[in-house]
Length: 264
Image (tube, helix red, strand yellow):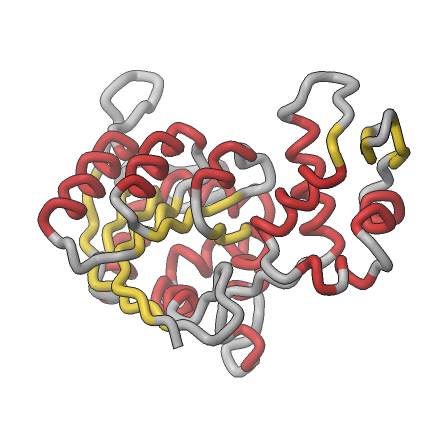
């Protein structure tokens, strides 16, 4: 069983805001019960084909105490939930009238400090769906660290490509919205549901030029990166091309000895 000594760095404002758009109840569960979803993370699988374990020896949460969303409590209300679960909570109040905080800078500095000070930590989980962290993830890769990033619906393809594994927002919401007694919520799921596959392919084309025609093999690589093992059955379809046609509603054709896929 692969075992990781891990550090998790949470941009609370970023993740909570993203979850809140999808499910208010899910976001509140995330903020008020970090012990529940972190317990699921301890058994999460990325590219591994066997069970894994993650020991989070570093837990840092970066929070704007005066921040809030419409119809939401002030973020400071959730501070004690993280403190009680053994997290270090770093207050990152706004520095400008527009509400800009320094959470991203704090995270980058703290992660690089951790690489130098705690060489035994071999995995870094960056809980922020922000492509600005892409250079940080690439730097961690140079230090031979395993990296995991949080991926919301609109998270950059380049950001995901830089890391080893992702925590998909849909999968996290499945954990947050399940009953505590439901054993299927014991670990982060990377199962390629049709909705997740469509999200991943749509994200690829949103970041491409209008009219872009993608190599089917490239899309296969994108999906395999996000959903290890998907190539075993292509989410219940006979082939990758069938998956792209039937599930993702793309046009797939042979063009000059290449198999291409595009939106019509």
